[in-house]
Length: 429
Image (cartoon, rainbow, N blue to C red; front, side, top):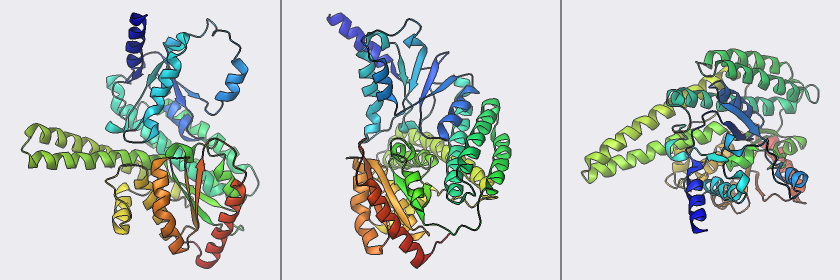
């Protein structure tokens, strides 16, 4: 019995972490409408059998198949690898794949299903997961896919409140995502940027024709908060559509913002490590810190360049909101004096993001987060008094998976305040 338990523990430690894919089927959790299919298509261009695993359907699936019977022989758990990235620090996101491992190990027939994790410590590097010759190109192509997803999401949110006929934007977006996924699947392993920009240029030009210029500008609402919850429409109970229902034009914080922050924070930590090594006369630490600094600096510069090119392509046709540099976010935070960038949580992005919205021509902001999430409750505690002082509409939107009977009433009240703000102050740029 003890020998069996020891074997199980050894297997569990090998079945989560940097798991090389090989010829396994790669399961990606669904993040949002745009990013996940584009990322899956990009990975398929590297001969990875990538598939999207629908999320928020587990309860229905469980009710359907919970019969006490074992899985069919056709299912071979060892052929699958589930992707669940993680982050360092106090965030519960760092524990998801560990808990999933425990759950899978409780079923003997699922112990062979492996979990692979990329971590924020090294900027979500695919090293140890992909083949060595594909690490650099797959990382570049994956980032492009994510930024492309950000642009498509902002295109949808910019156009849908002003579309000439209901459903036009969603129909075009669905078609557009299939077109872009096809380009990435065909060219992702080579150099897909030019191919992607050409296709995106045509799509955004088509989208411009949907906008009804007779519709007056609506209150612009910013969304910040925990990255997954604010982007996954089932988890946040389709918050953006509800806001649009009551007259909003929404700009959600991007996926690229988080990835850029991870690289930026890695650069900051490497600089701190260099200063410490120089102060204590530790040549090995100095050498290591310089190497890390160069790696994070090159990564960040590349990411910012790609982000700028993709957004600029779309902005030639439609005035979607640009993404900001993380250095600008740190500057906003320093000038405000209300929080420190040295505390590495999502509050470093949410607090300056809210201040940016309040000063940058928005008419309200929503802070979306899981119930009891520490960084987001910190954000709320810091900015609520500030927003009250500035008379700027602000709404906390915590979620715990349950239906909230007063949710729409709170959103309607918030949107009334946003409309009043628009009437008094208009919208900036």
